Length: 248
Image 1 (cartoon, one colour):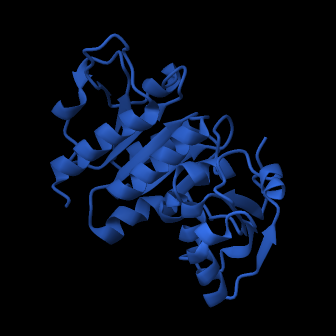
Image 2: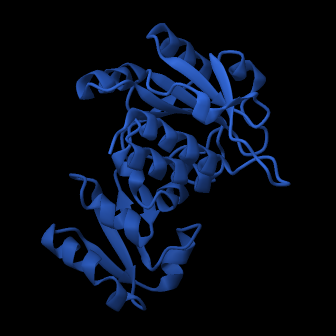
């Protein structure tokens, strides 16, 4: 199981490069001696910002990573999550209708990281996820997000149903994305304040969570396989929200 401790390792070129943009995030960098020539930009930034760099054997890096590391690992102070109350204030500050992505027990780090990248690109105000039975912000999520984790607002909550009820109390419409729904997603009104729920890779959105939705929507399929990867589905609907709101 990957670490969620106060200091953690992230790996891969893009996540490490993005960490230079965050004040006081980077504590130490490890670079494989076999890949120094390919990591000159990281070395330059580390020297510029006085970040300690250790040149190590690649076997050292392999011992502390669980994915494609590209020869670089950084020890960082993890990103802070925000509260649900703080998330609710974001849209007011930006003078935009609220837009939240709600992840119902997404456990795959590749999907979680990809959703973070989508949320950053689409200007989602916050990603809300449940602490238990979700992957959370582990090193492989940083890698999958290409460093986008740094730039999205994350709300880690004990009970996702509580979060949904709170959003509804603030007049935020809750949509659930389900393959078996009747309504096609592009026929829905996404110009209003909304929260979009996407479910886990195997089971989708739990029925007890579906029961809290104001509307359940689907992505129409013509192929043999009747569902899309959760991050792909999130991207399609998220950018339809942008289209309807005419954000460029």
